Every structure is written in structure tokens, then in C-alpha cells.
Amino acid sequence: MPEWPEMETYRKMLTGTVAGQTIQAVEVAREKTVNIPAEQFKQELAGRTIWFVERRGKYILFHLDNGKRLLLHLMLGGLMYYGTEDDKPDRTTQVTFQFDKGHLYFIGLRLGFLHYLSVKEVEERIGDLGLDPFDKRLTLEAFKAKFQGKRSTLKSALVDQQFISGIGNCYADEIAFTAGIRPGAKITSLSEEDLERLYTAMHKVLQDAAAKGGYIEMPFTKDDQLTGGYNDHCLVYDRGGEPCVQCGTEIVKAELASRKVFYCPNCQKES
Image 1 (cartoon, rainbow, N blue to C red):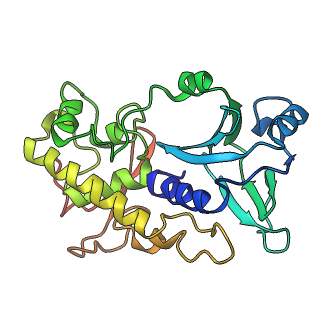
Image 2: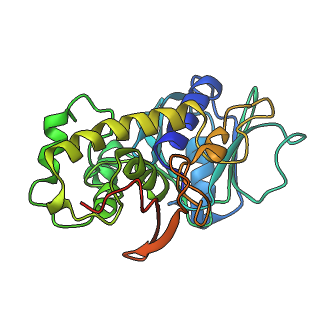
Image 3: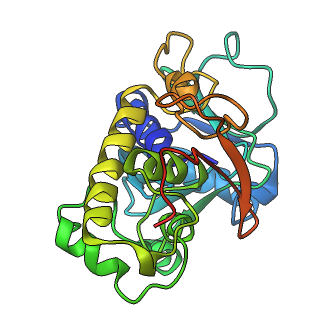
């Protein structure tokens, strides 16, 4: 499922392609992807201009010229592509926006959605999201305070979207590895130094991953050379049985609270 780096990459690319453009026409191939009848969805959006694109956690918000919003969550398998009928991927498309300069295809949204909402409705849906990892309010002291009294494991906390928004399975494991702590470590066992390393690791991992385009494999446009560049740079995630990049010890693949986890038993302490 796309996380902070993937959705931030999409935000930047959408800003450079569709922000400021007017939606000429809309196609809805799967009515369950949208939250109102397909014909109404098409009528509401045709002629609307996308003022700007915002990311909140794992969500993308398209701000429209009528004050309404489009709330997108890609979920597992969701993708976007901007281009033409000639160069678009041979994939099932649930919604298509036609612009003067191209088409925006929403692909693989079998679990994801694209909902047309008022500002109030958006806040009702995602108003309880935790702070963004790079929110100025999330200082080191504020980060430490979040862990006080929390009794879960480290990974469970990091993937909790009401705790901090935007981190999921992959980057929780990458952050834990970079901080030298196992994903299954109990929060009650973490020291001040552990939390400081986690705070630094969170920013480093997410920035590095975003700079490499995240792990989504399909490019956003035909000329996109960035998206998916992090795929070959994961340090532990999805590398079970492979040697650790730091010490050569075999990476362990395990399960924690029904989630798969990856870690180095030598480099990461249990705390």
C-alpha cells in the first residue's frame, strides 16, 4: 500500500501536471470507486478546475474551484497514470479525467476510492489523522511525548495513522532498522536515546525514499524516471533470507499482529 514517500511523489507530480487544469470530461468504469452515482459524479466534475493538490498522510486531496474536494486513497494495488490513450498502461482503469493536455487515469482501485466531498465531510473522514512526520509541530519532544503511556509494539505504533500519519508496513521496518531497534520491541522498553534515534531515522528514511520515488513500480508518465526508484534500496523490507547490508546476517521474516515484519537479528536490539 502506498505510504508517505509514494503519495508525496504523486503529490508533486500531480501538482506539475493537473493543478490549474480544468476537467473536460469524466469516465467512471466502476461505480463503487466513487461515493455518488456515476452520472452525478461526472456531471459534478465536468468543468471543474483543480486549484491545487494536497497530501495528508496516505491520502491525496484535489482542491476544486467550487470549494469541494476529491479525496483519494489508493489502498493496496492502486496507481495513477497521466498521459494519453496511446501510452497508458494496459491495466484496468476505474476512473478517468480528461484534460486539455492529457488524461489522468486512476488504476487498480478495487480497494481504493475517489470520493467527492465537502470540506466538512473531508474533516469527518480524516480529521483524526495523526501529525505528518514532517509537520513542524512534531518536534523531538512532541514525538517522545506521543510514546508516553503507549503499551504496544514499535511497529504497531508507527503504522497507526492516528499516531503519526503516512507510515505503513514497509517504512516502519526500514525506520526500525535504521534506528537499530526491532519492530516488535515494546514501547515501554524504549529509552530516551532509542526515541531520539527513531525520530532521526523516520525523517532520514522517508526523505531518502521520496528522493528515490518510493517503491511503486509503474511510472506516472511515459517520461517518468523517478517513480519506483526506491524498490532496489530497501534495507530489510521484503528481504527475508537475504544478507543484512550492514553485517551480513540473514534478514528475518516474521509476523507481528497479523503483519509481516523484517529485521536483522544482529543489528537491531529487542530493547
